[in-house]
Image (tube, rainbow, N blue to C red):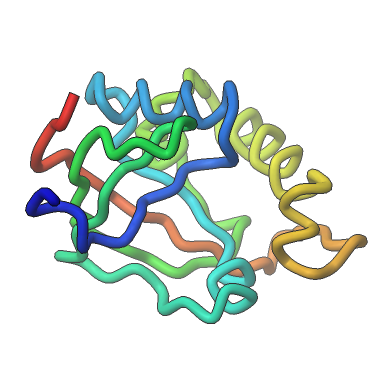
Length: 141
C-alpha cells in the first residue's frame, strides 16, 4: 500500500490510445487543462471538481502514474471555452473550432453515450462543461 492508494482515480478518456496520449501529455507538461461534461458528473453522481482536489492519474493499464491537483475550475457553456484553454489541453489544437470538433467526436461516441445513459446524447453551444486546470504534484513512473 502506498500513500496514494486512497486517492480517487483521475481518468482521462477511456482506456486505449486516447488515454495513453492524454496521460503522456500530462506527464510531459504539455497538458495543463482538461474539459469534462457536467452531465457526466451528474450521471455518475459525482461532485464537480474543486481546486485543491488531488487524484491519482491512471493510465490504460489501470496503473497510477502521477498525482494531479486541480488548480482551477470553471463551469461554462461549451460556446464560451476560449483559445487558451484549448491550447493548454496539450493535444495540438490550434483553434477552438479544432478543439471542439475533437471533443464533440468523443462526447458523441458510443462509450460516452453509454456512460451518460443516453444513446442520442449531443452537445450544443449551451452544454455545460468544466474547464479544469491541473498540475502534476508527484510522478510515480
